[in-house]
Length: 271
Ligand SMILES: [Zn+2]
Ligand SMILES: [Zn+2]
Image (cartoon, rainbow, N blue to C red; front, top):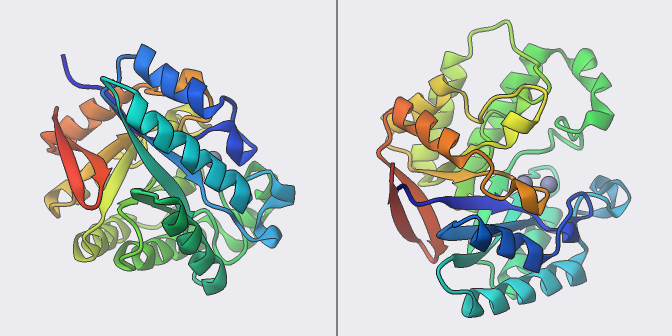
């Protein structure tokens, strides 16, 4: 039996998920997971935080971190790691610096890097889909991957989350994407960052794992290590279809998945 791990889960603290920290960790224990990285969203500036619904405030984040650290000491049989999901906001260096300060103060061990915004546009939000028509799908994909590559090379993140997120609602570019994939793999290798194989996309309109098989194989060829995550936003989603993520990784050429433990330490899970 393969070890089951999940390196991307949320709690109710962010405002758009359900389940207390205790319930999320208990779901991992009951589900037989040997490791879980809790990765709550780091606080966002008010202008980007849609009425406080997308991310906790500083106090909420600190309380989350405190809880996770307590469980990390107490829970046996499941490694509990304190992580966070950070945003790449190149136009808002103040906001990125603030996220970094909050993470450092809270003792966060693993930081996922996510591109959820192009400029100030949350392109993966169902409430802002009009903008896709205005900009055009091809242009959005190109801008996304350029932005993603900068994030991967920034040295700020341990793992790049859901690499081909723009496909979430089924927006597919007409242009060739292989050059974008090659660039992404080069950037991740150069930046020394891992990528995430996320089953979150299986619960979205696209109904696919992030990244797609071609992109995942490109990462593998470039020697980029990969974690697995469900992006659970409810206790019942913890560990969601992780075996499908493992299968996609094997298909792409991987033979191990990474479980990041913090401070550069990784446990390797055989696929
Ligand atoms: Zn979320
Ligand atoms: Zn997430």
